[in-house]
Length: 166
Image 1 (cartoon, rainbow, N blue to C red):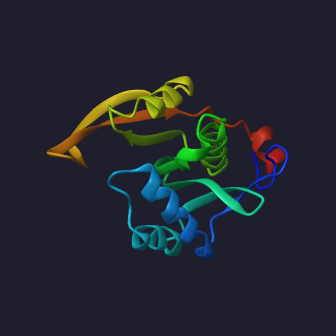
Image 2 (cartoon, rainbow, N blue to C red):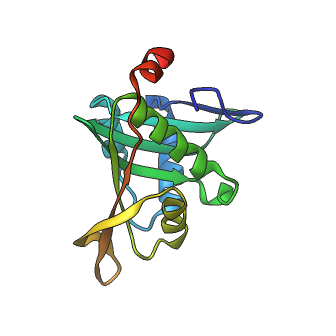
């Protein structure tokens, strides 16, 4: 899915600095321990793959991914809690996978809280498998929560596919 290739009045486009006000509103609604606006600004400045999903200029969700060599790492994938269960997270994840594949990634990694059942179901449906545990990775009330490290292998492009998409 490329920028603008979403259903109806939805738009998927690169995140912009002016999106950060709405990003922070969603981040604070969605998470007990949200990222700071500085973290998002740093991701934009660093040139990470940052995407916004909008409906009529209203931000619905976002995804942030970094690339190194042939690996992609999803850092944040979030949909406004008021707009969940409508396929928006799937749209964002599909797009991040497409971007990673297009940039030559052979594998995508991410961390997820074991307590985040909707996210775990999304990733399982999309062929992510648990490969490790990061002990005490996330802040939690009364201590820390582990992170499950998930990975998905991407199909390798053939030469003709690479030429036809380039």
